[in-house]
Length: 426
Ligand SMILES: *Cc1c(COP(=O)(O)O)cnc(C)c1O
Image 1 (cartoon, rainbow, N blue to C red):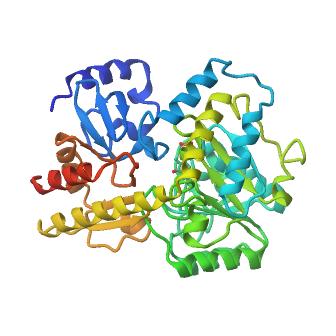
Image 2 (tube, protein in one colour):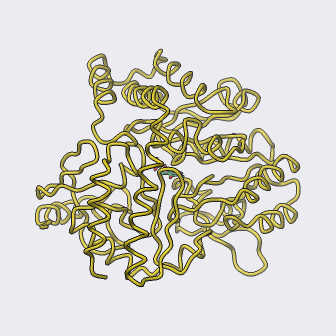
C-alpha cells in the first residue's frame, strides 16, 4: 500500500494547523509515521486519498455504530439542511430527540444538549457542584472526560491527596479540586472520600473504560462506588460518551445494572454530527439555567442538523434492539479469532472486551487499570498497528484506545482481519 498523497496532504496541513490535525490522536504520534487522510467512507470501509480501501475499527471513535454514511441518518440530515441550518430559537426536533433519549436511558427525566462530550462532562460537573454545594471531585487515572481543565489532572506527589495539572495552562487552583483514584480500586476511593469528608460533589467515571484500552469494572467495584456515593451524599456521574447507546439501549447503566445520578453522552447520540448531552432526574436538572442558578448555554446547542442525525440514529437503535447483541457477537468472534492467532505467536498479550468495545494489550496482563495498561509493549503495538494497516485494517493508532465495532462489519471482514494478523510478522 502507498500513502503518498496522504503524506503530501499531511505536510501541507502542518503548515497551517498545529501538528496538522484538529485532535492529537489523529497525528499517529503513538505509532509513528504519517496519518492516513480519508476521502470517503461507506458502511464498514474507509477509502483514503491514495485509493486504498480499509476495514474500519474506529467508527469515528464510536459514533458510527451502524457504519459510515448510513442512509437513514444521511437522508435525515440532507432533508433538514434544506430547511435552514441554525436558528438560535427552539425547534420541535430538540424535544423529539430528548423524549426518545429519555425513554431509552434508565433513571433520567430530563436531558440538555451540548456540542461535544467535553462540554457534556464539564457541564455535568458544574451541575453536580451547584446541586451539592461542594467543590471537589474524584476522577480515575486513565479515564478521559474531554479536555476541560478539571479533567487534565495527574496524581499529586507524595502525601498530597489532590491532583496536579498534567497540561500547561491548567492552574494549580483548578487541579486542587480534582482528586485521582485508580480504576477498580474501591479501597483507594474510600480512603480519598474519608480524607475529604463532606467536600466531594461527585465521582466521575467511564463505567466501562475505553481510553486506556478497554477496561471492564469489577462488579464489587461498581456496586461499592454506588453505595459509597449514596452514603456520603456524593453524585455518581457516569461518563457514557463512549458507552451510551453502544453497550445497550440504556448504555452502561443497563449493561451493568448500576444507576448513576448524572449521565454524560456524546458520540453515538449525534450520529456522526457534533452532539453531546447530559441528563439526570428532574430534581437535579432543575438546578440548571433557566430554571435554576447553574449556568450553561450554547449558540449551536440543539442544532437542527445535529439533532436530525441523532434522532435518526437513536430511532434506528431503538427500533432494532437486536443490534447490540449482533455487535457483541461480532466482537466476541473477533476476540476468539485474534486470541487463536496470537496464542500461536508466543507473545505476551491480553485482550479485553465488553459488548462492542475491545482492545489488545501486549503485556502479561491482566489489564484492569491505567498502570497495568501502561505496561504494554509499545514497540510490539507499533508493529501490530502498522502491519495491520498495510493489510488494509484500520485499528486505533494508540494502545490506549478501544476499538469500536460497527454493525456494517460482516463476518467476512472479521475473517479478513484475523487472517491479516495470522500472516503478520512481529
Ligand atoms: C470522546 C470522549 C469524551 C470527549 O468527547 P468529545 O466529543 O471528544 O469532546 C469524553 N468522555 C469520554 C468517555 C470519551 O470517550
